[in-house]
Length: 460
Ligand SMILES: [Zn+2]
Image (cartoon, rainbow, N blue to C red; front, side, top):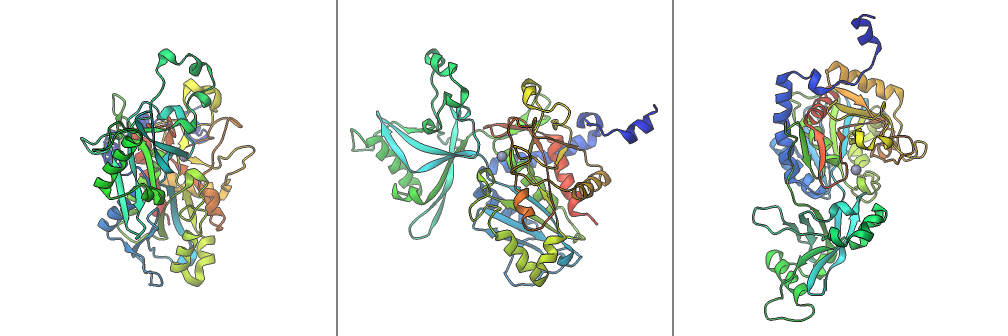
């Protein structure tokens, strides 16, 4: 069979290392320097929204004034309660013809402090935690941790907290058991190795000046927090404080072909969605929209999650009486990660169906679990529209199954967007070591996500 026919008939995985020109590989490396900086600036959804607003304003976006007009080329954003963000570039076509929407989430798995987190035991002060999102508890022991968050005082004043990121800042630790005494621990199932309730963070050892005995160490931690931020133990109740890995994102692999870092699920899709939107020099044909949502790792519930009506309300504000048509004719990419195949855990992966690292963005029609439950299955028409956009732009892409049937499962934002009558398909970057404190992505795939979203926003 000659090659032309073979290329025509077969749909094959293509390795970025084989098909990308040197100049494009260099462009991917340069692009990912910005991505790594972004990861290092934002570890929580609030930080992501804050940074995205700064980036947007630099690109000429202004806050959306409810009820104002919306003319082609207008660039607006809506900061939704500091934890979710909608950005829009008005297109040439009327809104009733639909929008191009890319929706990513900016929350990541982490350990949240409990409502009354601080306690003292045997002369050591601890922060008690309640994990957020799917985590393997044992991965959070024995690594440097930082404290990020936001405290609101009774007078309504908000304070950003960040300890453990600056050079010279102290970091925190969840202690693990030494291997010498871990015989029993190591024989048990991994889920019991470190109990979620035991993910307590060591905060300090020293007495508060002038105090001694029980409670003096806890008091000292409160003193330090008070001196730095002016917060008391009571203020920690009206707070969102999280413990996240303290190490920075950086180049990964001796060839620097990958990005290693915390929180890439789903900032590895949020960042390319933003850069694609910012790269639009002319008003696009269809209004281009990026949504950065919160709470995806906890079922998208809550007022800043995608199950809230904030996005629909935004569309109502810009499209008015054309809202049903605008929703109906829109096309949405649920920009979320998928898993990359890994040979050492081949028994849970589909060797023919799962996405590969360094083989481009993953277009996945469904994920879910237990017979396509907890997912949106995109229609053939929606997939066809995306295939065309990606192929026409020469974007490297692949498909993914998200593991073997019934090996586990996952959901994304897409099911909540389809509830608005918006055809939606998942497309994102394959991730290795997903939901671990140090996730890995291929630079080529991250760059392809930027190119994919750019092509999507420029669709005609
Ligand atoms: Zn996730």
